[in-house]
Image 1 (cartoon, rainbow, N blue to C red):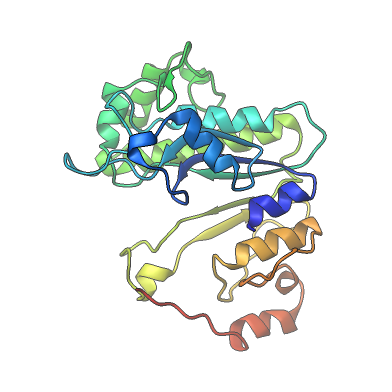
Image 2: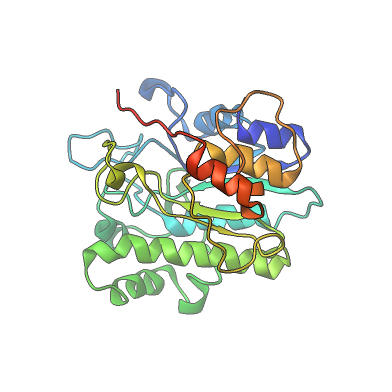
Length: 276
């Protein structure tokens, strides 16, 4: 029982692209194809650009089942996501897109300079992905990746620029398909900006942005406390799906329109955080 499985049961195509932390896959039995099949069992019609766990942040760290032939590859996972968007299907879709950057695991500088767009966890691609908004405008993967470096103010910018380009490419693909305005695009971080693993505001408070012109006016702000546990309830609410199981979170959809609902989220509900 989870968000993807609920959408899948209600006629949606469901896709997981990028990094996955939620399955117990043993190192001594790992294969890329086997990992894909395992993640599909969590409610996904398709799985692509898959990284199991984080890449290593040190020489002695666990390196995501990598034999050293691949590292971060935002072009690969973005291309996999665009393939899902462009599928010839009348079914709506739900996608979980989880990039590996700008996470501090494996050097992003090395990934840009020492690996190519063809180096993936699923082996060597036969050709480079051609992605409008990323590689297409530069003519090659190498030229595009050098542009990421050229547009930065230092190494710390490499990951955010690479990610920002990927998000732009996804939005461009939705626009080209003609479904951008009627697609809910939710972007958020997974932990606070200041510190990870802490219950101070800098650890638990994250930015969250939602683009959905069909239902949410540009510039709308919801200045009440919400939580990541509210994402599932809210997305199902927008889709008109009644969940088949009890959810921990609450939908904030009505709080966009109702003062009483906003007051409830602000003053009538407690959010509790703990660290084990």
